[in-house]
Amino acid sequence: MPIAFGDTPITSVSRGATAIASAALERLGFPGQTASVFSAISPPDAPTNVAITVEEDYAAPSQVTSLAVDSTGDGTIDLSWTAPASEAAITDYRVEYTPSGGSAAEVLVGSAATSYQLTGLTNDTEYSVRVAAISAGGQGDYSAAVTGTPASGPLITVSSYISGTGT
Image (cartoon, rainbow, N blue to C red; front, side):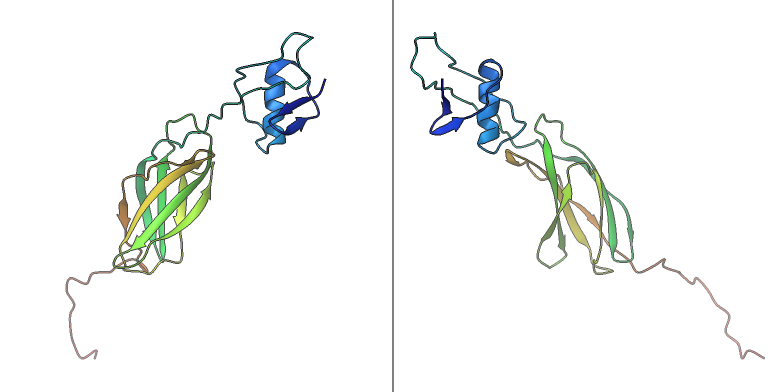
């Protein structure tokens, strides 16, 4: 008996309604996703086309927490954060950084990261940084912003000096 999801035929089915739904998601380009089946295979004398409804459970992740500037260096800011406490599978993190008086830029960081080093920054310029988690359901809310200022090296303060002729 041929089985279809909408107008898309499902060519391989192994076990029951869950397998049908999983095959439908795979066929539609969502491998590894789960589904809930609301109507399944009817008795043997039912029509040859079986209709199933797949409910997608995509939700944007919750907010990244505990964003911190761990250190700054020559053109760099080292960041760390706590992953969101959500069940959405994180695919990336979006790190947005804005120099004082400038325009925002962003970089995507892999899903396993909870730290990142921004590089190529302008020394002695304050940057505002925030991070958002991304999943198949979209982007979560940005974290609270933190600030950091890259510096070209250690600052040495001279508190006194002795002048002389050098003889």
